[in-house]
Image (cartoon, rainbow, N blue to C red; front, side, top):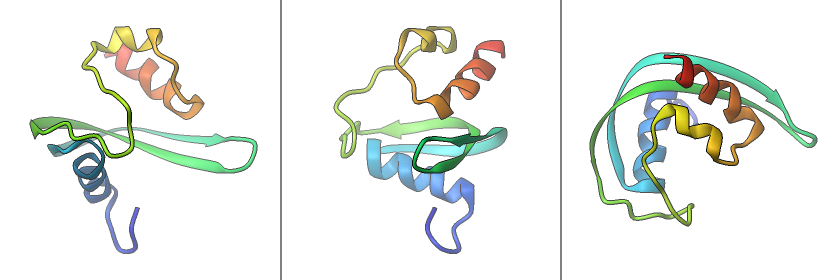
Amino acid sequence: MEPNELPEQSLSRELLEELGMEVLVQDFLAEVMHKYEDFAIKLLAYRCAFISATYILSDHDQYTWVFPQELVNFELAAADIPIAEQLYAI
């Protein structure tokens, strides 16, 4: 997050910068605190409504749309796993 930026604003900005994706950030889903070996992360998850995307990737090599139950087939960062599990339960 940038200084003085709300989490919802940060999410919207990051999706636009990294994927060329425009979304309407909606309700809060989950918070995960995870300690890696060298740092800790606080990850906030929100439900979003997709508006549009150019999929011009700046920080990623590829993308794919999947159903929540398919997330288990991907190598996820440790901090992402609790959120993927919660999405699977929805």
